[in-house]
Image (tube, rainbow, N blue to C red; front, side, top):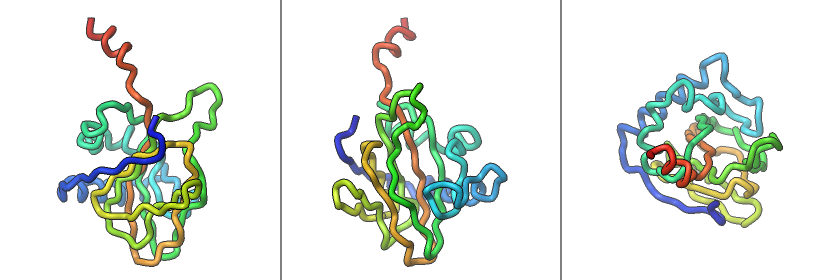
Amino acid sequence: MIKNFETFYINDEKYIELLKKNIYEGVNEKSNFSYKTNVKAKMTSYWYFINEKPKSLKKLKSLLNNYNITESWGNLYSKGDYTLPHNHNNLDITLKNYDVSGVLYLTNSKTGTYFNDLNIEIKAEKGKVILFNPNLLHSVTQIQEDKRITLSFNGFKKDINRIKQKQR
């Protein structure tokens, strides 16, 4: 599990534009979770990029090849939208907690992701990916600009022993 957070960049403009297009489509579907969760903004369902647009995650998954991404959703913030403090602990006690959570910023924004536990705000830069410990409390303060678009995800570390057994 990641201790706090790590960052890297995806510098593929076509890929970023594809993800943005998918999010615009997803927030307009009946299954959207807009303003129904701790994200007080438009959002797709938590499984939108797993069930509806799995090919869109191919590049991100290849960069995160040590993890199985099991949830992935898009967030479309407008001026005044925000996200309440929360963490990504799995609330279903029959399942284990996630090993990684992450955000891919699809636009630049003056408003980053604030990690309440660490008193740190990570700057929102187009193409930046932050991987973080799912137990960390985090939030997004009110958006000042017209638009902030992100792709979020949760996942589990791949079990190397299980993969080796399948290959036999």
